[in-house]
Length: 120
Image 1 (cartoon, helix red, strand yellow):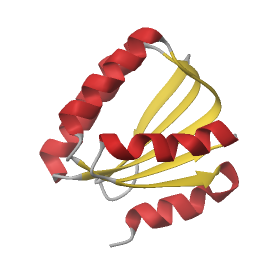
Image 2: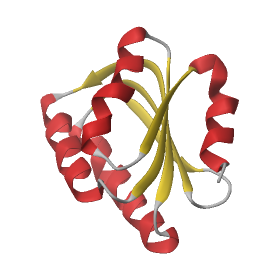
Image 3: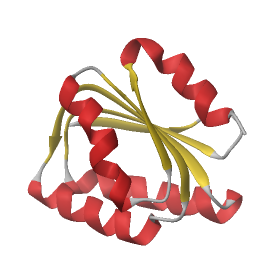
């Protein structure tokens, strides 16, 4: 699993790029970054970019569930950028677990996703 976390311009937008399969270890760096952004800016917006993404390990699914429960009100918008139909389905699947507005964007529309996240 290769992953990276970078904070985009404006400070309220957290940009996360993932490749391969998410593992439990991903959350040890991701969660503190999210917590810090929330402490500094209140509600945040997340750009979740998937490239050659293959899902979650069992341990990562558990960590993701705990994250969703803890932060279901803290994320204002979630832009999911992906390459496949099942990734598009993630936008629908995520809705019951968050108060965030969620939109899916094809990987060719990443600039549109960033624009949507920055809009008021």
